[in-house]
Image (cartoon, rainbow, N blue to C red):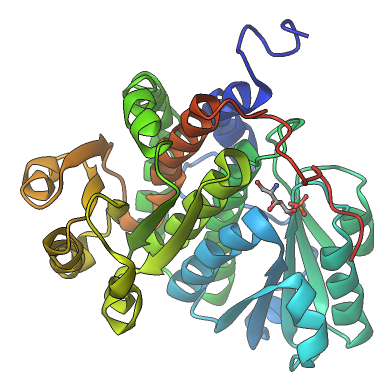
Length: 371
Ligand code: AGP
């Protein structure tokens, strides 16, 4: 068993460390030889005409895959300029969504066997939509039923808590957003080149976060003594905050909530009391000042704030928080592929500190095949 874990104590930790490889493998063969374009013509059978005709995108998934879809929404909207809605699969089917033949439905599923996601996929097809799947399992039910498939090459994910599958789904969304944008003519070639170049740097940047993995142990131990905490962020930081919160809940059993930082003052601020940990993601530089002012609001009510900031900004952020962790700087759109890693490590160590079964948390199954 230790051999299967490649010397790591748990599958989850092994899978966290496999992310640089998962990123490289998911990008491989999908970036043009010139390094300046993205090719998904093998995965997506739509003509340029059909891609130009897409009027809306629905992203449908569950749990962590849904959180990847929240990032996917921003990626596709900002690059390809198509309106996107991201929905939880178990809700999507029952709200009679407006699905037209020019709707592209994207289902995201690590296992490709999640019952809710599969049911949503079938509902979308019944309504005449084209369905694109992002999945980690070749030949899975979702892959078989979809019209087009982008495989994430993360390799088998054993731990119930998804890590490398989530981050590889982000890579798939970056590739997809760029591809759709190229086909629709909504992006300049220079911008594609800039993003692709930054994507190529991500694996080494993740590696550098992993080299400092031990940093998160101490803070996780402190966090594990609490029963409640908050994750806050704006924009893409809010999307990642939701994933960080789910990860912590499912394996450490600590209650947490992810909040859009600007929304706290509309109610949740009442829950902030002395000593409560607040994990603040401050990586979106255009929203930076706004998030810092929200951090001041919770600090003033006694919260203990842990900030995750871009390299180069840590000193500035340190003035407003109690502890700062820095991540390498990349383009704002790509930051989720880095900022999630500290949150995965934090959850892992908090679960361990609480003496839980990290790889097999209570009440949960790896693949949920019931509705
Ligand atoms: C992730 O840590 C969870 N275990 C869970 O939310 C999972 O992402 C969800 O059940 C969806 O699974 P899928 O990607 O295999 O469809």
